[in-house]
Image 1: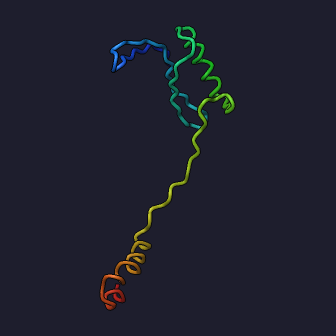
Image 2 (image 1 turned 135 degrees about the vertical axis):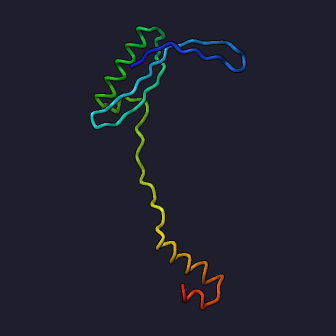
Image 3 (image 1 turned 120 degrees about the horizontal axis):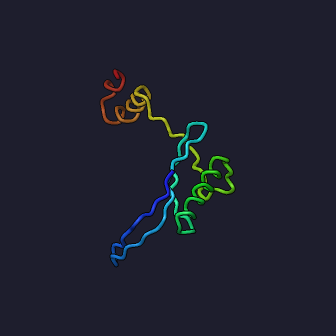
Length: 107
C-alpha cells in the first residue's frame, strides 16, 4: 500500500504541480490482481490514507455499485485456423483458380 506525493511539470508552461496519489495492488481471494492508481479528492496525507483504506475495503467487499470503473468482460478470442483447414481452403480457392486441373486433383 502506498500513498505518496507526486510532482508533474506542465510541458507548455513549465509550471510544477504536486499532488497526493494512492497507488496499490489488490490481491483478491481467487488469485486475481488489480492495480489501483487514483488521486484523492482531499489533498492531504491523512485524506489520501483514508481514501486508500476506503478503496481497499470497497474492492475487497466487491460491491460493484460503489466502484467507479466497470469491470471488463472477457471476450473469447477466435481460434486461428489449423493447417488442415488451411490446406483444404487453399486447394479449393487458390489452387483450382490459378493452376492446371491436374495439379488441383493431385493436391
